[in-house]
Length: 301
Image (cartoon, rainbow, N blue to C red; front, top):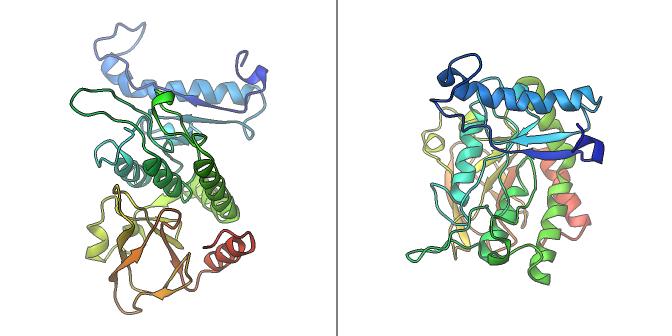
């Protein structure tokens, strides 16, 4: 309260909280039991501080550690420190995996650092953020709950949104795309708070009987019930193969209609940088309004 709130801060990263040693010596209680509970207590400290300041609805703190009660305490989660890489285990692909698995585990408000965080200088393999990776991560997070960058642990060695005018303009454009979904996202956040429904969700929550949907790992996801996103997650790729569940879907950037009312189908769609594969249901009022707003602001190709 004295260092953050009193200085005017209205949001912060409540980092760590997951590393209590199993052999720690505590004043009271078992370290094995408290290893998980510590994450809840750390979040509770932050929650109590903002409540005591009378700012419970004005401050957002985001956590990376959690346990069973954490979603009811923490205002927001993030996925920790991904590598600045395309990897499925700890790179951009893993950020989608984390959103989907977290979403079905009660962590309904979650996000990742745009561009990842961890840079490593290694004689065998270096990990440094490229311009392409940063731009693809910008595209990805524009269709999630939170749109937030991170310079990483070695800012000077990574491409940043301010590294050149082109990247800054790219970031600005997708910040406006993100903002254009504000009303839709607000409704999703309200439902997340009331019902625990994840903002970003796996397709099987809407299509549980479709075996193709159940096979999806990180390749695509839904933002609420109306939007389907298949982000580009491979270096050098300019198209993606997308599975569209039964129904008619509209491609966001072109307005083209795809899909089959009676069965799901795969399509391959162009996805150059700046046009990630995004679809919305043909009967979606939110989707139509979103596309109209993008057009009115000059954000469509």
